Image 1 (cartoon, rainbow, N blue to C red):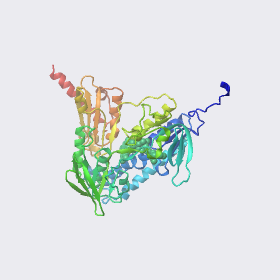
Image 2: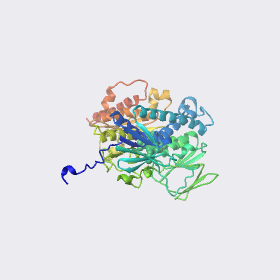
Image 3: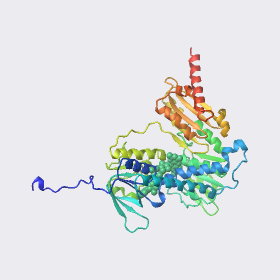
Image 4: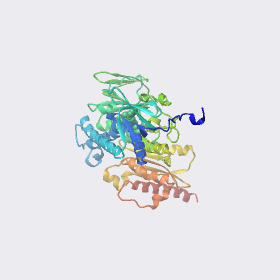
Length: 483
Ligand SMILES: Cc1cc2nc3c(=O)[nH]c(=O)nc-3n(C[C@H](O)[C@H](O)[C@H](O)COP(=O)(O)OP(=O)(O)OC[C@H]3O[C@@H](n4cnc5c(N)ncnc54)[C@H](O)[C@@H]3O)c2cc1C
């Protein structure tokens, strides 16, 4: 047979394909991957289960928890009590229906916005559960349909997110023993609740229930909560939560949870037993990869369901990318969105800049916490010379106006280069305010920018000015006393 007689073997990576990109999962990572590719002119589809448009973020995670928090703050009147007294309430008998009314409203609106954005960008929405047939083909099975439909794509982005990790030893009954999804179907505000796990989700829900008046016990096997935060900030939060009748049991292992029609008993390895109306487990999260049939595409997941990617979010199979919670840390909606956009750019060879290394963390406890950069402990361990500048909200006119006397902003400043090394905030609008410090840090700015700049008055942003002056005055004093 001559060379001309050899039949052309189709290149499996060259198609033809139904789509240039198919995204599995419509959470923040999937949405942004789909829209970024569509904006580049590619044919894109998103596979998602009919009842989950918007992902965990919109349906059971970020949006419902933050909306619940907002509803609790409003209805309990908590943020107004400094002005109007400890008994101030907008509604005295708050029900879960009151809280869920706001949550359902916001979720509904968010779903509409996401659907409209996808459709406006000509992204097809394929309803159902996606699973791999091979690296370029996915089966899409609608609930109840007898035959899945097949769809092919040059590139695939897996953004199937995560679900609560459920320890096998605990019997979740969806009424008294719950995870963070189950909390969203509680029928009554529990008079008492045990929260197992003092990570971000656990502590956020602990503070929501405490604000509602539930007696909350937080249990964690670790010696402290939110260990990544500034200890002064976590101490302030603990003080506030204790004031709302939260008790903490750190360094304790749960040995079992019993539940019956009267309530629950959580037993600890140390022999203690805690009775409560409900138990919420917040024991980390697990990548949602069970239904994907990854092996058919040449992929696998680790024991926590996570998929490994390189710094371009590419898996070991070159045409398949993965973003968001399914690739693990930091597992935030905030980062997932950016990973999705970047994965689409990398897939299509579009030039892309990597994410800035200074990233904020927002913790929506009551009061809220946010930070970026390094902590005092990290700087001390690394022997970096720094000074601390502190502003207390009660010394800001805006702090008085909004009735926040406990908030504080702390700047960590390099004593020689005057660079900002860390920003740690506790109190009203912390999660918004942090971005000022983040921008200065990312641009390599110094504390002098804050000293020399004029800020609106009266604002909470003014805390930056006060803290900058505090730090620079201390640095100046050391220089004066050293002469
Ligand atoms: C209680 C709680 C509070 C949170 N608060 C915050 C916060 O304040 N700020 C923040 O930044 N992050 C927060 N997060 C984290 C945030 O929700 C996640 O990081 C984010 O949702 C991850 O986005 P994702 O793109 O990975 O997909 P997800 O939002 O996890 O969505 C994945 C989607 O994939 C779909 N899917 C899975 N398998 C398949 C399949 N085989 N076929 C089709 N579809 C599939 C699922 O139905 C789901 O809709 C919170 C999480 C929780 C649980």
